[in-house]
Image (cartoon, rainbow, N blue to C red; front, side):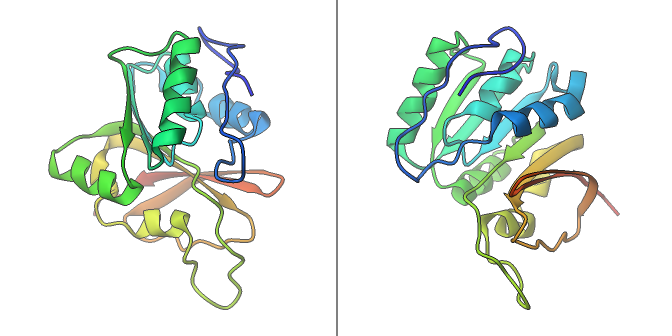
Length: 193
């Protein structure tokens, strides 16, 4: 797996072995960043469910001013830090936070942190026919603290599997959907009443 654009394009990213990490595929990342274009430049980024850190590092490579990458596993966080070093994207602009995603969201909210771009491609949920989703993606949409982490013009990009039907709840407003294979990425803004 490689960074596909920006100053670190071509840098190889290592992924922990096993089924604990499902990296966002290159074609999907390419579609996401083609859609974002220059919107990434000078942004404060938060990646939730970091895995390999590919989304954070892609943002930094493309001109984001800073990125926090939340990953629960200390072992996976080591891979993320190694990937940042090998891509020459480590340093004060990049922070790996080893914490449960929802606990990190709560703490960021309590400390008043805000981001321009939040990216989350959590582990896929189960197929949900005739019932509400219980996936991490739905839990992120339902999290009362997450909307407050976005700056006024901020954007949440949320991944899930197409078999996982999500309820888009207030204050989220969907502006775009990208589909590739089994992956769906929703672009969401916060709609304040």
